[in-house]
Length: 242
Image (cartoon, rainbow, N blue to C red; front, side, top):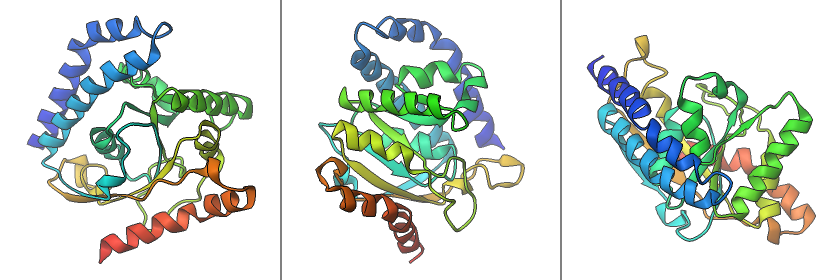
């Protein structure tokens, strides 16, 4: 439990004492959003690295060369843990936000920083609002902000992937950005799957596939690619077991 204590203390202090920074970043909200994302991304990435340190997590990265250094990308990943967000953020080479479910808005303080890095809140039960979110995500990708998308819609602790919701793929298609399929293994064992939700030292694997550009595909080829995404990620996960 000592790991959890220090990680929680680190998190609480970081959220509270960085409030002045949040007010500073918010100043760029309408005037220069990319500058806001860049500045807050550097801070949040450093904060997440501290969480990983206190958790004692050893990260094995496969396909790091597939992470773009000079353009935005849509990272499409399986969802095991809150650490999916934490670790993916630290590995991105460009400012990065996430497409999160609307329930995150009810968390204290956290939504402020999620918005600072460019994250969006998706209401899957409201079609009109979902379309607005996808349109805004397309705009942000076009402005250079990478996004993390978890098509399962919730954290999944089983060996099989949950059904994927493909609506978010259109953000890459419309913006001209690549999709990078991402597979993570053992992430849930860091925290959520442990007794009393204790933080445990774990060896985890995260793998990045080669970038794919849906905007350069013909309609049928693009549809076939979208349909294949769950199987492609499952194959990556299966390879981790070997």
